[in-house]
Amino acid sequence: MRPLPLTPRARHAFLHDLAGAALFGVFSGTVLPFAGVVARRLGAPPLWISLLASAPALGFFLTAGWAPALVPRNPVALVVWPALVARGLFVLTPWLDGPAGLVALVVAYHLLNGLTVPAYAETVGRVFPPELRGRLVGIVRVGFSVAAMAASLSAGPAIEQFGHGPVFAAASVFGVAGALVFRRIRLPRGAAHPLATPPAWWTSLRDPAFRALLATTFVFGFGGWMMAPAVPLLLVDELHATPAQVGVLSAASAVASVAGFFVWGRYVDRRSGVASMRTLLTTALATPVLFLVSFHPWVAVLPFASDGFFVAGLDLAWMAACMELAPPGRVAAYAAAYTVLMGLRGVTAPFVAGAVASAVGPRPVFLLAALLIAAAGLLARRHLAPLGGRRQTPTELTA
Image (cartoon, rainbow, N blue to C red; front, side, top):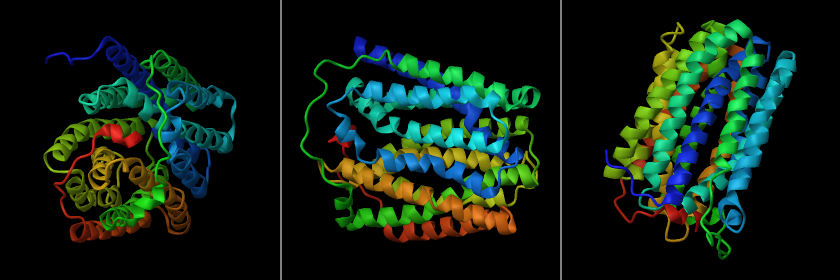
């Protein structure tokens, strides 16, 4: 493979981004897949598990529309310091008793980590050349996923032997180190530039094609977010999965996500983001169905892998769809609208699922999720036509 034609500054940024992502992957793969399972084993009720599941969505509300506001500032610092504090919180886990402290730490982590999302996007936009940006970010994500996979495989047995407190605290050190490595990225001089006031996110709702995309993905995403608290409840209450088994399941999801980035990346390039969303929304029904029929921890490898594969595709396709549907200079508003609605379903669906699981157990949650995702697939086939029109450049995301 020929080396990518990068300037010294871009190569320096890429290598530090990749190294920081790998260290973050060790932290993420050690802590996040196990947090809900550990909290449940410590006695957390279903609604607390729902709070854990909805915590990332709270960050979406905090980040929507931030990218334009960050341009005059130093986005590297706005990645580093919230990330450093968020990951550093987990050094406290050996001294926390019961589930309440762990739940509070995880929620605080997601709130702080959500602040880094637009700053990271702005950093990438400044330091990576547009013609290579997608490939470079893809390599960084693969590095993160591989590190997370390896960490998950080793974290499960470690938690069984030493308990979650020391293991999470050790992972915190890797996470903090990743933030400090990212701090070494140097922005180009004169990269900051003033921008006109960007259009408000709600102005994108005037576009009927985009409204169809939002409505369809809202139904789909509501079903997806319902599964988030149901998974640890299923693993602990019905499948009685051990931490080592949870580590293998998380690793299977990471492997599938790496494959998904390659498969769906090619699909998006060959077809379109909208066409990819249609395909995703009509085939991702496999995930809740496989969870519904999983009666042994090792059978759950299938839905975990399915989830990793389809989430990777959704991560790529929704942004591509926004870039295709938005007029020039409006991509940020379209992306912000999508993110706001993602946050809305993310802070409501897990609590609906928690209430259902408290009453009748976790499996009916997967049935409801399957019905919603099936309905979204039908809506997608009816209202989302493949689009072959103008493709926006990634730089317009901060326009």
